[in-house]
Amino acid sequence: MRIGHGYDIHKLAEDRKLIIGGVEIPYSKGLLGHTDADVLIHAIIDALLGASGLGDIGQYFPDNDPKWKDAKSLDLLEVVFISLKNKGHIIVNIDSTVIAQEPKLAKYTPQMKDVLSKALAIKDSQINIKAKTNEGLDSVGEKNAICAYAVASIL
Image 1 (cartoon, rainbow, N blue to C red):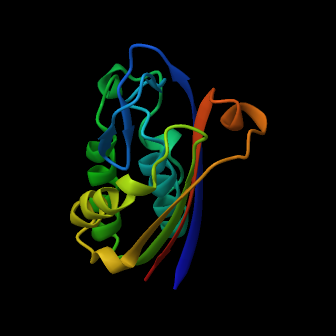
Image 2: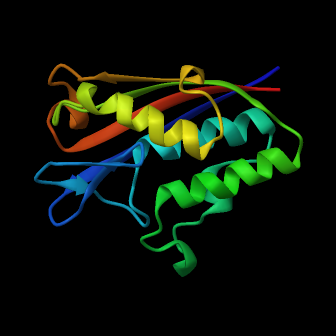
């Protein structure tokens, strides 16, 4: 068994769609980034890459590479999933937490689980997504950013 940990944070910005866990969330702002800035998928990617010893998201998808400009994070996840499969790894489970003061995300987590479990060819019982606030503290609590943590176990 191998375990990896992932983290990501992005600023909230005007004129951007808010995509978290591959799901578009209705909100007045979106996350700023080179790709669609899906913090949950980025944290999961780093957790999977860490568990498999394949580096990190910046090595796979550098933010100065025009190839990845405005890319869907689900597409990035597919690239990483294929790399894991090619090394013979199997995903055992993923546990994650998304931290956002706004919008409230709990009602979207079942849809996120569905999207991600299909993308990773795992049962939805193998992925857990928790939605939390930061109780008004720091940039996340002040509604300036959203972050996510993920832990992945693989064989």
